[in-house]
Amino acid sequence: MTSDEERRHRHRDLQLQIREVAYLLWEASGRDHRRTLDFWLAAEREVLSETFDATHQGSESGAEFAGKSLLTLSEGTENAPDEAASGPDSVSEG
Image (cartoon, rainbow, N blue to C red):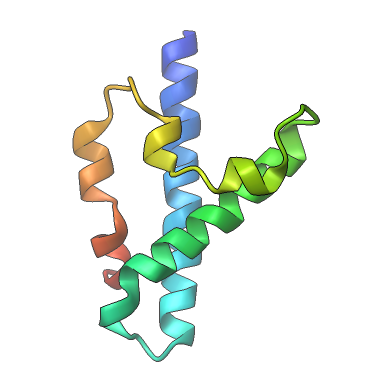
């Protein structure tokens, strides 16, 4: 597997983890459709923070890393159609 393929695979795994967490948050809220973006962003912070803590011991703190959007972290990848299809609005599907 090339480094580009590995990066896309990791990105897809992160997207799936974020989607699962966001869905759980959405369900716990009573399925409040008005807050899907809030749930997506909270899930993004949680998953990225956990990922950072598990894989990095650098100068950037987990909170700083988690504050970045997954889309920001993946700039330059060729996954734009996948990102649009699995973004915050897809949380209510399931």
